Structures are given as structure tokens and as C-alpha cells.
Amino acid sequence: MLKYMIILLFSTLLLAQNPFAYSALGDVIYNNADKIEKLQEIDIFKPYEKEIQKYLLDIKKVKAEGFNLEGGSSAQERKTYLNHLRELAKRNDFFKRLVESAYNTAIKTGDSKLFSAVINSGLLDTQRHKKEIIDYYFTHQEDLNTTGLIQSYLDEDAKLRAKKEAQQKRYKSKKQKEAERLRWIREHDKQQKERLEKKLEKELEKKKLEIREYQQKELSKTI
Image (tube, rainbow, N blue to C red; front, side, top):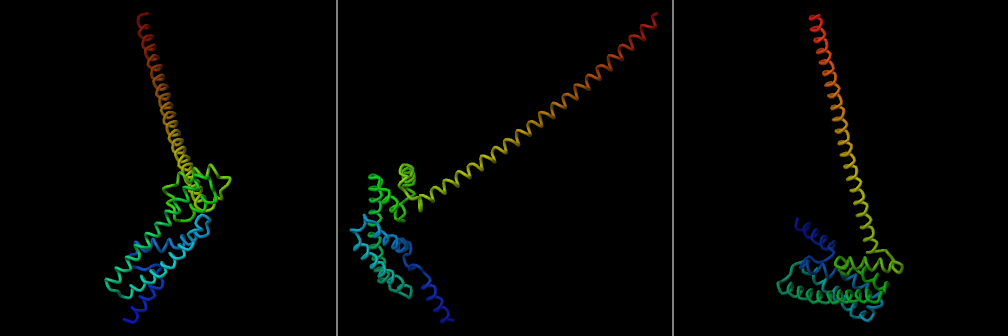
């Protein structure tokens, strides 16, 4: 049983993408590593190549350190690992600030190539800049490739328009049904009124006839 549990534990560790210890902090760092590595492909970040490579090497070391904790660790080892994560977090934030700065530069200079690269880097808070990104696209759409983030916005917008149109159709259909119901009620009321008027007319004519017959009968008695 113990052997089975050990095998299961190691299998779980092998399948784990990131270390479990302090994952709330570690996952952000480890998951951004590939994105930061790709910054080297963007011209504006070329001066930071060595710094990026050193950062990626340090991430591998700290990540291995995190996995080693899973087999059992002392409080001091966990504290050391946490301190290493905090240091990496500062450097992660540094690269994110570089991307934010590059984004602002692209907006100001109208550099659509740089703009497209940074918004698709995965390191920019695109939700916060969504309106600005869409506005830039409509101003510079001839220079931009819509693949990636912008295409997702366009698809999302198309879905919203389709949803709105469907809702409008349902609303119109509902109004049409209501209008038809009101027309039926008015027509029904009209028919009821006409039948009642005809009935009253017949009763009135009958009454008049009875009165004339009575008058003629009375008149014949006096002759």
C-alpha cells in the first residue's frame, strides 16, 4: 500500500505543471515565463535579451527547488523558496512594466507592428486597455493584422450584435403576437356589439309591431 502511495505521489508530481508550494505566487511567475521569453523576438526588447535569459535560468532553478519541497521540507527550506519567489515576482513585474511602456510608445507613435506584438504578448492588461485597443484598431486597421486579441474582440462584438439582433427579433415577435391578440379582442368585441345591436333592433321592431297591432285592435272596437 505504501509503495502504491509513493508511486501515485511521484506520478502526480510529474504531471504537475508547477510546484504546489506557494502556488498563488509561483503560478503567476511560471506561467509568464514563456511569454517573457518571447519578448526577445520583439525589436524594442532586444537590449534586455541577456537579462531575460538570466531570468529564465533563475526560474528553472527556483522551480526545481519548489518541486524538491514536495518530497518533504523544513520550515527554513520553504522560507528560502518563498523568498526566491518574491525576488522573481519583482523581476516578473519589471518585464510587465516594460511591456506597458512599449504599449504606450506604440500608441503615441502609431507603431502598429509594435502595438500588435505587445497586445498579443499576454503580459499586458488588455481588459483595462480594451476600449483604447479597439479605438486604435479602427483608426489603423489598414496597417494591422486582426489575428489574435483584436480578432477575439471582433468575434465577441459579432456575437454580441447577433445576440442583440436575436433579442430584437424575439421582442418584435412578442409585440406582433400582442398586437394580433389585441386585434382579435377588438374584432371579437365589435362582432359582439353588432350582434347585440341587431338583437336590440329586432326586439324593438317586434315591440313596435305589437304596439301597432294592439292599437289597430283597439281602434276596431270603437268603429
